[in-house]
Structures are given as structure tokens and as C-alpha cells.
Image (cartoon, rainbow, N blue to C red; front, side, top):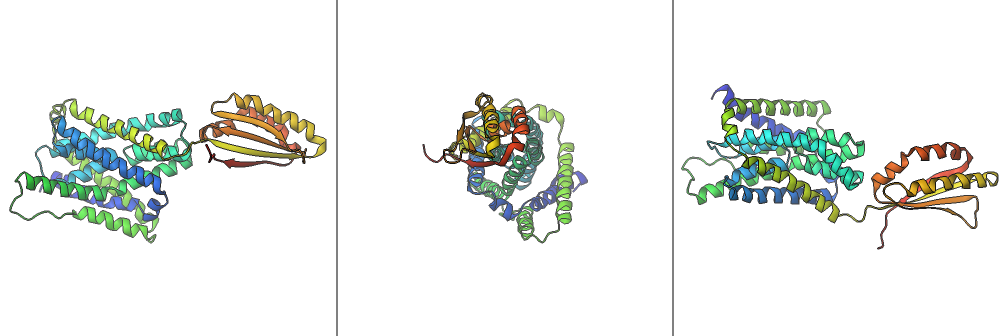
Length: 378
């Protein structure tokens, strides 16, 4: 075995196994049921549907498994992991390299475009994090897109993304089982020893996840393992690239590009549909209580009224009203409703609000006290 062959095969497998140090069971459980359902459904539909589409447009269904798995799981890492689990084929390395290049380009593009889509749709921070984590291909781009918005969005996006990474194991198991059945049905099952149902690197991945979940792995050890995994995968990619001629990539035509773009668009639409279906309206309703001394009551009333009309003109404001308690005339309540969390955040950052509060704040004996609620009844 040459050095290039060793790198593109054995080093690749070590890189996949070490990916297990990215994940713990606690991280998965902390997400709740909805992200689990979204990731599970999107994974099965993206891989299953696009295996069929690949066959319909003239490709081997395994290319649909390879590109669909890369789209639905974790980009280039998933493509390399699945390639390592698939049986030898004259075109496997070319298909792998093309998938890695294509998925990396799409991942970078999605890192730039998806935050804009998220903002246009008015997703709240939790939904935005789930959306980014469930749709962007590679871990690095998920982290970049999420934390560029806020820490809350970045944390959620990263956890959802790691949940997708955890799906490598069942998908590798499916890939090996599928190719066995396919070979048997096509009469290509040889007389030699059969490869194990779970390759050793998949078992290693599962073992490292289990060990990492105990909490006994020092952070420095986990960080070194994760870094080593990245270097192994990068080296394997170089090895595969050195074995592939550029003219072979150019010869594949436009069809695989269309396939991979279609998988990406399908995943985005599917995740957005499930996010909207699984949520109650995103409206946020706020009660803000203000209390003052009798001597300051009229000035507090005047200043509080200055919030009303500008707030009503803001995008996402459903209503905005100032109330005064009948039995406690020194207590005022601002009751307002907003279309989503992004509208609330935008209002809180409004320069007019800060300007009024600069004078209003010293006049208050209590507040502003905010109570956030969501609508339950229709």
C-alpha cells in the first residue's frame, strides 16, 4: 500500500473515529424533542429521496447516498466517512472528491445566505439556532453563522449540528447494510470474507461518544482529539485529490451539481416547514410595570406616552398601549405585543427608547418590571 493509499483510506478512518470526541449524550438530550424529530425526519427524507432521484437521472443510487448523507449530516466529514464505509468502485474516489468540493462550496454559501433568510422570516433565537444547525453542512460554518448573530443562536445551532454528526453511526450502518443487500440482489456477492456490518472506525466513533459522555475526558484531551481528527480528514482529502485527475471531475457534467443543489434547497424547505408546523405562533406579549411617587406622576405619564406612537410604527409591533391602575394611580403598565423575538430585540435597541429612559429611569421608584408571555388561546 502506497503512502497516498494509506492516507486516503486508513488515516481517513482514524479521522472519522475521532469525530466521536465532539459529542456527548447530555448535549443530545438537552435539545428537547423537536430538534430530534427535525434532524431525524430530514435525515431520512434527504437521503432516501435523493437516492431515488440520483437513480432517476442516471447515477448509481450510492452517489445519492453519498451526497445526500453529506448534505443531511455534516458535510465533507460525512462524505469521507460514508466513502470509507462503501465498497470499492472505480468511480468512488472521483465521486467522493466531487462531493467534498461541492458540499464545501454550498456550505460556505449557506453560511452567508441563511442568516439573511432567518432574519427575513423573523425566526426567534431558538428557532434560528435550530434552523442553522439543521441545514448548514459543515460544523465550522454552523459555528460561524450562529455566533455571528448571538451567543444563544450559536449555542443552539452548534448543539443541533452535533446531533447531526451523531447520526453518522446509524447512517454508516444503513450504508453497509444497503450495499450488502444490493450486491446480493445483483449476484455480486463474492466468496471471500464479508466485511463487518459496522466498520471498526464506526465502532470507534460510538465508543468515543460513550466515553466522552461520562464527563471524565479532560477538555485538553478532547480538544487534541478533535484537532487530530480535523488533520486526519484534511490529509485524507489531499490523498484522494492526488489520486484523482482534474479532467475526471470536469467530465461529470452538470447533473451532479444540480443534484447537490437540489438536496440543499430541499433540506432548507423541509426544516423550515417542520419548524413552522411544530411551533405555536411566535408572538410575544409583554407587561411592563412602572411605579413612581405622586410628585412625579404627571411627568412619568408624559414620558411613558412618548413610547407609544413610535413603538406602534416599528416593524413587528402588534399593539402598544399605556394603562394606569385605578386603585394605584402611581402605577402605570405598558402592555404590548410583538410578532416575534426579533421584533422585541429590535425595539429594545431602539435609540428613542434609550433616550426616553434616560429621563424616565430616575423618576421611578420601581421598575421597569417586565413580564413576558405567549398567547395560549386563539
